[in-house]
Amino acid sequence: MSNTPHQLATEFPNDHALLHELKLHNPHFVSLADRYHAVNGEIHRIEAGLENTSDEYAETLKKQRLALIDEIAAMLAKAKAAA
Image (cartoon, rainbow, N blue to C red; front, side, top):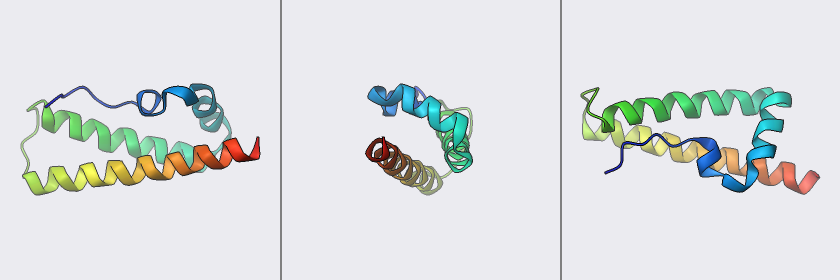
């Protein structure tokens, strides 16, 4: 299992400029991105063995990360459609 943290630019490699634009102009996106980075950081620490937790809690965090990715992907699609 890789313990390399996932970054939004890695998750959405073709949308770097749009990610940056949304970070500058969309407070809801900033909130989602901040939550993503917090959840992702906690997952990384767990996978790296820096934090001990139950498997159930780790899976809950991974589901949260996926839900955030889905919401961010929807925002990116909406922004692309509006462009």
